[in-house]
Amino acid sequence: MHLIAALTFLLALPNMAFAQDVDPLGQYQWHNRPLVIFADTPDDPRFRHQMEMLAITPDELESRDVVILTDTDPDADGPLRQTLHPRDFMLVLIGKDGTVALRKPFPWSVRELSRAIDKMPMRQEELRQNGNQ
Image 1 (cartoon, helix red, strand yellow):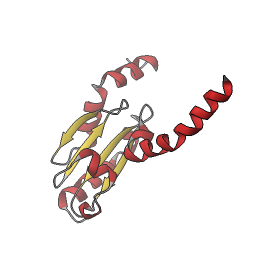
Image 2 (cartoon, rainbow, N blue to C red):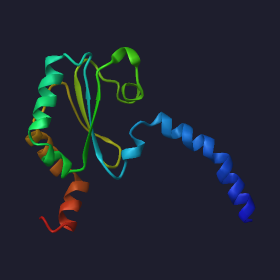
Image 3 (cartoon, rainbow, N blue to C red):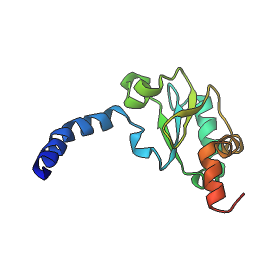
């Protein structure tokens, strides 16, 4: 019986690797909150402004398990673009459960992002478990 289970697992490995390639955000699920920032070029003033705002207080986002991902090359049509379908500049916040929590077509401050994250049910639970609420 164990041999059959082991063979089934080995046969499933290629499919598991393929599924991981299809979901570029899967590696963050249940561990981090990806913040994905899209622009058509790294010289987009909105993109530059967003990155400047994020650099001011990175510890606020780090304490909320935020991982920042960027894509400024629409011609490459990478996996993040295929998954999230941005138009022009876009900021997308993904919850730890893998769902899109927020989409904005303009830059947001760390304060606004922190407030949005702190309202999420999973973040509320984290705060309760850490005795911060």
